[in-house]
Amino acid sequence: MGNDREQLSLVIIGHVDHGKSTVLGRLLSDTHSLPQGKLETIQEYCKKNSRVFEYAFLLDALKEEQAQGITMDTARCFFKTKRRDYLIIDAPGHVEFIKNMITGAARAEAALIVIDIKEGIRENTRRHGYIVSLLGIRQVVVVVNKMDLASYCEDAFAALRDEYSEFLKKVGVEPISFIPVSARNGENIATPSPNMPWYRGALLLEQIELLETTDSAHEDLLRFPIQDVYKFTASDDDRRILAGLVQSGTIERGDEVVFYPSCKRSKVRSVELFGQQEITSAPSGFSVGITLEDPLYIKSGEIMAKAIEHHPPLVGQLFLANFFWMGSTPLLLNQDYKIKFGTLAIMARVVEIRSLIDSTDLSSIADKKQLERYNVAECVFAMSRPAAFDRAVDFTQSGRFVLIDHYNISGCGIIVDKLEQSLPFTDRALNYRELHWDRGFVSDGDRILQNHHSSKFILFSGRVNTGKRAMAKALESALFKLHYQAYYLGYDSLSAGFESDLGRGLEALEEKIRRTGELARILTGAGLIFITVLDDVDVYDVRKLRKQNEPHEMFVVGVGSENAEKDTYDFLLENNAAPEQAADSIVRELGKKEILLDYY
Image (cartoon, rainbow, N blue to C red; front, side, top):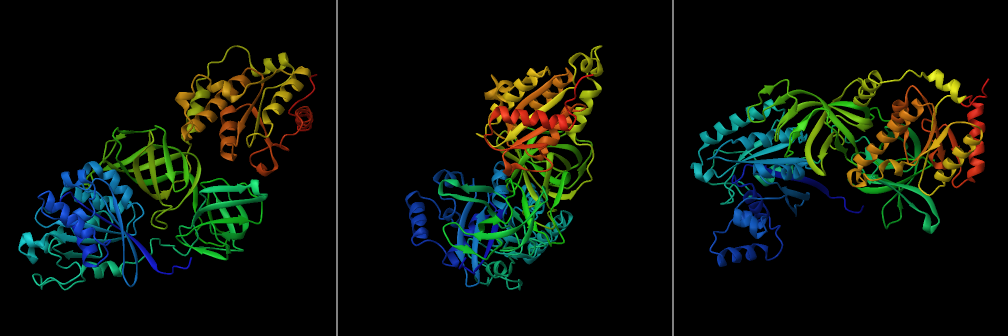
């Protein structure tokens, strides 16, 4: 917290062999930012191996990368000027490593696009320009390299500048400047070039110094995504510490805050740094923990904003995005994928491809049913539950997302806007199921007359090791003794034999909810009172289960007072309550609510 120096992250990208690593290597050398002996070590290595020394070797440190002559992964380095500190990312330019390039550029505040004056604008050069736009990077400097190979010709520079400016304009990027350089010779990097007197603009280092650290149109507004929640019960600390990175704005003790998408409200009781004493505030860029005045149950993935802000996060399940697919297999419509917004990971699918854009010439293709590798498209995404997010033009970080396919980051995009909620894909599937449900001749009314009660789905939920299962089984026994057709089944019975297929990730959690809901619909359709237990369901899980079980009723029992969410539970029990007493209290509650009725 004592470091008041500005920090700026900068990514350098460009087509393979256009010299971006050389530009960066020369920049580090000319500003004396290299570790002591680094330059001499690489020069000696080149001498021993009969290689011509290249400044790019300062970054391409791995021998196999030097042998191939291309940057395979992102290299990160730091340097300082009198004004501030810099994190510079050298991203790969080869088309096969475009995923690595996007990973490197994702958190950059500015970009340098390097173009070889002799080779000119290539397909990947256009693609990189589009990706810069896609990632919402607004500060772009185009470095026209190898001017010595074009005899320092001003006309050649002007022609390339005009052509690429026209392309960038179409994708919504307005470069700050075009700078002609010869990186190998160090011209216009840190010192003026005697061979290009016609260029009167800023040197590359001067232009970098003029870049701004602001990366959001609303950088003064608070965005604090919750990464995790910590409790130190072993040391008798009952506080719930919400930890995360302050993306924008400032958290101050006493702030009234709202969490999205749950819309829970409280006040900040304390702001803390790990290993340090409590502080009064935390600005953008710092990872901190906070505690609240109220014992709210907040889950990771929610975004905290100030209650007084005029521009809160958007909340919804449907949004429009500019999207880039880089998976090895095609992206299919209505296929489930994992989507990540900062600290939130949920399931989502592309429900509409409005237009597919060729990133090399910006031509548009309509009526596509899938996206091939390196396709750019305007897509409509539907998520399995409501999430909080922002438009990328307003908040760069919370307006970006990635799509994960089989544990690999296979796509990335920026959010254009929230769309008005149409029928979610889960609702469409359930409506289709009900429409095609093949029923027998026995009606629901016949079953009520036969069983002397209507069907119910009773769900116990709460933290692990709270006695939920014993209570649920006791309830089954109590209802059975009262001559109700009750049946308990634990979720583990549903997944037996399929553990390897389900795994333990987000997909497995979604499948757990789906299977439980489908089983509940079958058993309540058969006229039974179905009882089961699930750990840590939230309001969105419950809404999904209620929807899956329609037209039959559902009753949710929450075990543990910390989970007392009005929209989630119908009845609350204390942790590890006596099973028989818990069952009796639930039976009485069901009677009060006329869910269980005496038969006449």
